[in-house]
Length: 102
Image (cartoon, rainbow, N blue to C red; front, side):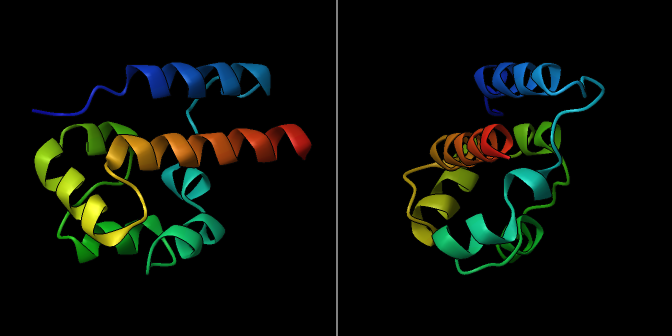
């Protein structure tokens, strides 16, 4: 069973509308930038983090199709977050804050 990304995608959709780029949601590398990843994980990129955990995904949609249990377990053991949703929410908050403050 995948993740319910509706709340996060609604938030990100509102952000893209707000900043005039409604074509796409932010890229994973924008949400999980090097600063965020270094602060909360032992990886410098989201791709490195995912591949170390043997997950393959390049978008939020692809992450949504991953095993929720396996990804949550990996996040809990390898980050400061309890699960993937907490990690994603934190990244989204930091992304929004940076967009607002420039």
